[in-house]
Image (cartoon, rainbow, N blue to C red):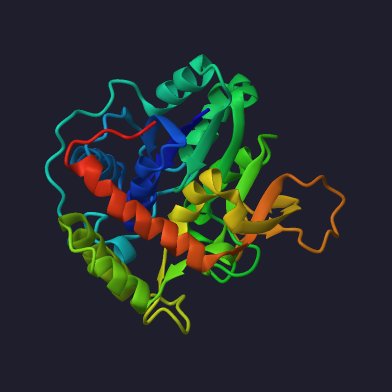
Length: 324
């Protein structure tokens, strides 16, 4: 049986990689795509989602999410993803409109009407899901788990302790992490190990399709931008982290990853630590474990699956159907 999923994303260069992978993997029944303000503004991420879906010949509802985080001003990652959110790559104009339903309405209706519990794949800030849980707490019973790219047990990429997706809307993350819904967290601990090296990038270049050329251009932009940020270390010069892809890959191939169950809380108010995912990996706090925190990935197999997805995606672009 195919896995019913909803993808909540903020495209975003690495979101495009995650979406491509999801479109190709026939194990997934993608019910809905909702957009977040995060890597860029809501207007740009919604446009990017529609544009990329049109390019990939995917007929999936795209519902626009909230314009701002719940209780603070939006900070976007233009320095990493570019003015449009997709570097210097331009996909064709979208050939369909965004949904007439808001993301919150569409999430509620899709989840409650699904015969099977739904997996939420979240690759941006958790604003929409946090708002959904505030407005319709009853939907939590129909969610199998949330596969979330965000957070970190150790370190951050926005501050010394905070990762971007949680930092952008820590209050929404706090709501979600306290919701009781099972969470699998693909934080920086694992996503920094889920990278393409120079030989992998060359292999993608050698595919020689328009899609592979566009993806290589996106990834090179991403690498150049990352090298300019404060939070880079040895390896950024050549390696490209596929952060968001982890959240999708876990759903279809959890055997690629290893992790531990931990209690995780979100710091919402700390002067120096706002947006930190406080992961009790020492098991020193008297609270129940609420998150499966990934820390290891079989990198070679992970990359092989991604390259296979790029090769298979040509069938979708040319108008072929997914084999289900």
